Amino acid sequence: MFNQKKFVVSHAPFWHDGSSLSTRHYHIMLAAIPAVIPGFIQYGGRAVAVVCFSIATAMIWEMVVNKIAKLPVSIGDGNAALIGLLLAMMIPATTPWWTVLVGTLIAVVIGKQIFGGLGANPFNPVMVAMAILSLSWKGIFDFNEALLSYDFDFTMAYPLSSLKAFGPDAISSFSMTDLLMGRQTGGIGSTCGIAIIIGGLYLIARGFIRWEISVSFLGGVFVTALLFAMFGEEGKYAGPIFHLFTGYTLIGAFYLATEDASSPVNFIPMLIYGAGCGIMTILIRNIGAYVDGVVLSILLMNLANPLIDKIRPKALGKVVEK
Amino acid sequence: MFDLLFYLDPFVERNECVMTSNNELKLAYCLTVILLLVGGICYAAFPVETPEDPVRKMFKTSAGNVLFTHKVHRAETGYGAACIDCHHHHEDDEDNFKACGDCHTAEPPKTVPQNCQECHDSVGNIEEHHPKTVEGEDFRACADCHQKTEDGSTPEACNECHEPDEIEGQQKTMNFQKRSDAFHTQCIDCHKEYGSGPVECSSCHVM
Image 1 (tube, rainbow over the protein chains, first blue to last red):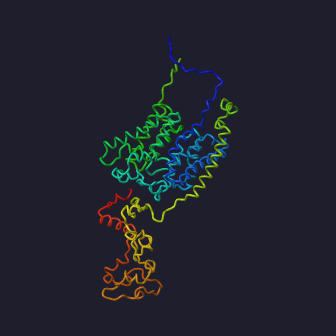
Image 2 (spheres, each protein chain N blue to C red):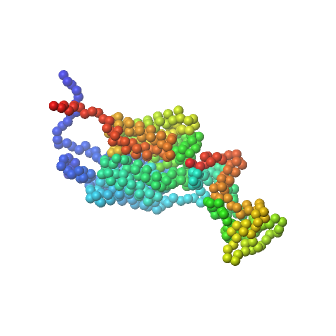
């Protein structure tokens, strides 16, 4: 007797289980708050200004586009707010208001709405904005230059810049515990590794992001950095733990690479996509021109996403030609 | 109930699918207004201020930026340098510093300054630094050399009045190093003197 378990599907009417886009987006924002708080504590009111202004302007831009396109106002789904929050988490607390305004314009209008809005964007909108902003106003987004006037009780040089310019000897003053606990310079919400990991694990546990992408991203970073450290020129490359806890690695793995529309949906493609992001990140950091490679690696893998997602199970059955 | 029916309606237009419930929209509107206000107020209340005694300074150069730890050099718990150690001034007056670029320009100076008081605050100070115009002679009056010519201009270079052998060895008093040379001399000489600190290009310049 054939006794395979089957899905039980009942007939209509169906009942909405209450989950919605807004639930998902507000939960991601909630999970990100522990990572933002250390930024507020370190940089004070200025960090609050950047975060609040970024979220508000992202929502305003979305409203403006909705009105121009004569579409229903879609800010209720929380996606614009999420874009604003993630952008603010990546930029220094000294970012001027007009740069935030331009950043959210790029993210919401160019990164998302031009392509058709939520779910239709081929690239992560936040990544598009970060790439354009950091290429356009290099000084504003260079953490060493932006945070010149801040003085905390830890090494204030941006770890990845020190590594890039002076090699692994220059990063000996950074302890891994310090890096994990957010005692490093960087974006408002991208330095406190432990808080980002806790938020990420919450999102994975609740099913809001896919573990396959996050784990393979971090795995790609770890393995590639390890290979460079083991087989590369001696004394030239930093170890894998340093790369995991610095720059945008953790926020990239949990909050950026996992963006729905620009990442794959099948199991193998998700692993390839995540690993590709991680590998590219280290390649750019170790042999590329840029200090951090997360933004460009995610954009590159976003580009490859439709192709990678072609790897999927064959449909059952076949066409029989008569 | 209306929302539920809306979601379940298979004939709904695609562009209407993004419609969210009124409550979500109201929440979003409130959030936007509140955050915009808080953001604006915080931007106004917390401007980025550069302290009078800088923490760090970034020297931007074509050979790569240099991040200089000003506070560490200055602090007693750091290298304990006095202001005058680096911000040398012809009058040795700790209360009257000039910006480095006032004398050490980005490009090498080709002419002497047009006006003595661009650099010198007093005549005594001029005599201190520019005493021997000609070997073996006493001080001259400024106007002996720096007199206005017929076209109304003042001499722009020593050799407009002096023969090269006449001022040999004296030119250095007016020969300011350009800014990059001055900084290199300042930093490297001090690091060598104390046997500590970087002296190689790639140890300071972020390429």
